[in-house]
Length: 126
Image (tube, rainbow, N blue to C red; front, side, top):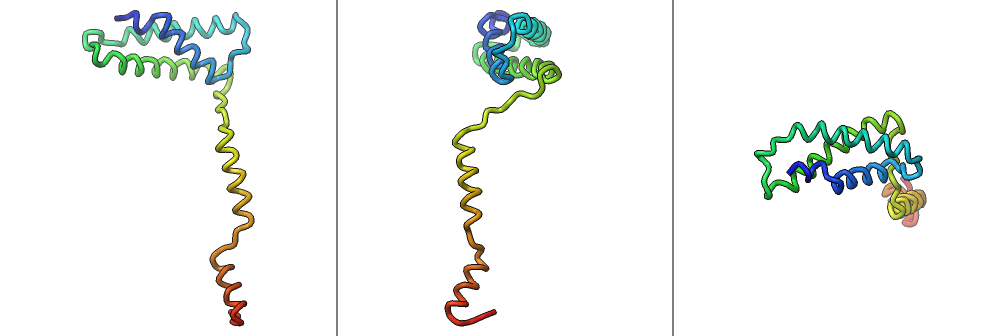
């Protein structure tokens, strides 16, 4: 059961997520090795907190997800001290919508402006 948490697949999954979130793929091998060592230490510390007698096949995947989230949270605090906060990738679609929205707002008239124009057309001034 412990192998599900400390196994190569789970360690690799967490490590790859960290590299992606912090955009650390360009680091040299020594720095990557240090990150892996920190991650393994955190994983070993966290696995000691688990109560394996309460884990069964029904809740195993849920517990693994919670365990991984906890490990990611702890390694993230270490990495933020050394590399700063992770860079969030900007969604190109959202960026386009914001730009389009800003441009369209510049050309819009308020309801009050429309009302005033309508009244001027009818020859009534306020």
